[in-house]
Amino acid sequence: MSQPYRYPDPDSRSAQFFARARGVLANGYSRVVASAPGPGPYVLYARSAQGARVTDADGHELIDFNNNNTALIHGHAHPAIVEAVSKQIASGSAYSFGSEAELALAELLQERVPSCDRLRFSNSGTEAVMMAIRTARAYTGRPRIAKIEGAYHGTYDYSEISYWPGSDVWGEPDPVPVPNAAGVPQSILDDTIVIPWNDPEAGERLLAPHADQLAAVLLDPVSDVAALVPPTPKFIAMLRDFTRRHGIVFIVDEVVSLRLGYGGAQGEFGIEPDLTTFAKIIGGGFPVGGMGGSEEIMRVFEGSFFAPDPADRPRISHGGTFNGNVTSMTAGLAAMELLTPEVCDRLNALGEYAREALRGAFKAAGYPGQVTGMGSFFRLHLTTRPIRNYRDSWWREDERGWIFQLQGHLLRNGVFMQPHMGCLSTAMTEADLDHLAGAVESGLRDLLAEGKAPRA
Image 1 (cartoon, rainbow, N blue to C red):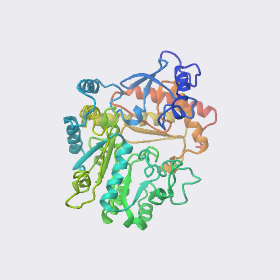
Image 2: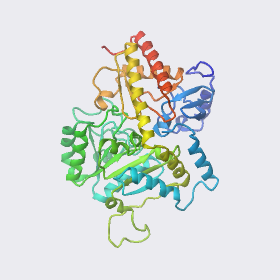
Image 3: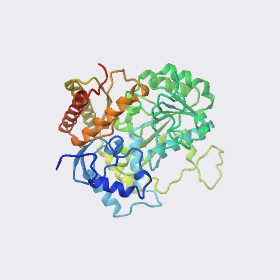
Image 4: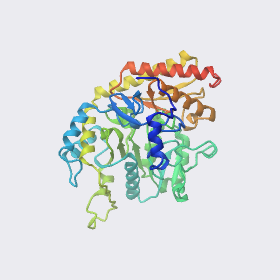
């Protein structure tokens, strides 16, 4: 970095930009998870980014372990993606026509994710999950959905239920549906069943009374809020068996988890979904969403919206001005072509290196904590209790302050990441991960010196 990083710094350009933003943007920004360390007084503003690093408005360079919330698997401004997009934009950024890039990206996903006989594109992961839920309801004629406690599936009433509930409302011993925000009707809660992560017995017991009303069960295989602990084979098997027996659509949300391997999480864990949702890495840094599934279920999209279906099948419309736009499709195709099996293996090896380096940081600092994760993901837990699910990983009040303090320390030492998790990009090296581990170790030592640690 060009100079020591101060945060907060009221004289910084980020602070000045945020003061302006408060006059035009509600709450000063347009995202729930913005780049403000902890409950900081302002968000950070970027000047530029390249590879594994982002430069803020004041010229400070940071190693980016957020990667636009996991979307930038190749880091920032990869030359091949920049070249492909620049060439495309010179010929038009969006048409009311199809494009060869859309076909090619769909064919690539179809080849890598065999459960997807047919696909459609949208503009975000939220839209992808929203359409998957509607598809399941149209196909089954049923109203309810089930999801995992602590799983985030986008900014949508149903998918946000019990995303981050507190211990005072989450229900004991079984989870109950909890709204994530105001404005959620009771009917949404009534139609959403919540089950715990990696507990097949409790999951089946909670699903069984609603079997004939369930349209879909949603699974995010790498939920960062729900502990970042891999799904167990028994849990996956229960969900797949239960949904098959009762004619329920099994939706696997690969918006985040597709980066786990060449065939996504379903390839890594042997999951066989009926529908799959995509976003993030398939856009190459541009807005994108997508869903795919069996030919039978995806027939709900067939036919013309303006003419009756002679087969009298359930049908839904799916419009969107920028659905499948040629710029996002071009960027996504370039990004996914770069993600070969060998590149996936190298990235996952870096992920394991990072987790081991971070465990070493805890040990060297003498701090009693843990590291979870898989593939190119990691999560830090400032606790000694076993981490198995959302409730285990949910911050107690003291832990919340500790993790935010650690996040601020990392920022001042050239590392940007969310407080609860980080992810890697193919632009990173072991040296970047060693820097991360060193910054974490010094931050943990500071916490320990202040008595901010769990009892060993």
